[in-house]
Length: 249
Image (cartoon, rainbow, N blue to C red; front, side):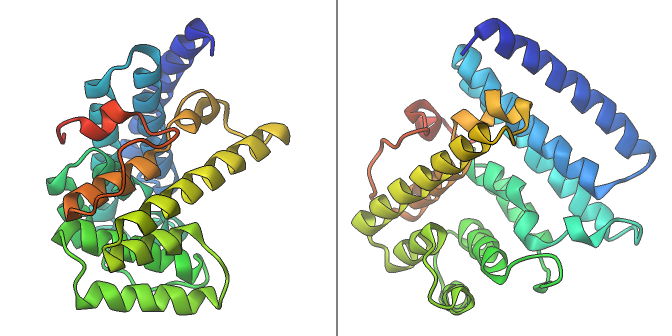
């Protein structure tokens, strides 16, 4: 990776965030809010890749989660926001909050993620996955309610294989070896999907240079396993150990 190119990209991302924030402050737009969250994630990952800036990584992902929380709260004040972008399965910034170990943000986002499944805009298994994460990460335990979510997710898959489902079931079972295998598989599939996008020239250039090189979701799942006390190993591809060890933001 060319550091100069990366630094130029980070400058462009900062400028784009500034432009978009001005636009949503004047005219709230759910799609733009989610892209702002994406850009903060890209900026955090890029900052770490450029200079191993752990604090910068945490700060930018914190901004992503904060921006998403603001969007969720705006939802209660406006009927003009596109519901397509407000379904539970698009709560990727929740993963950012888990990845940096921010219990306060996780709890705040989880309290706003009280949404019914909307099959017009999301797949049931994605809905149940984010439902599981929000419940378990905010409570710090897999309770009866969370176990019902796992069952619903499994039923929605109709026998199909899913590395996310494998992760969820390993967490439910409190099985470290099973979780390690599930995380290796999940991160491997994540990496493969990125390479497929690169080969087909179907990848956001900002994402390609930044968050496509750090598996933030893998980091979040590893953080969650530590929070729950599930030993699943420390080192995974595309998950820098320094980010796993970092004190929560």
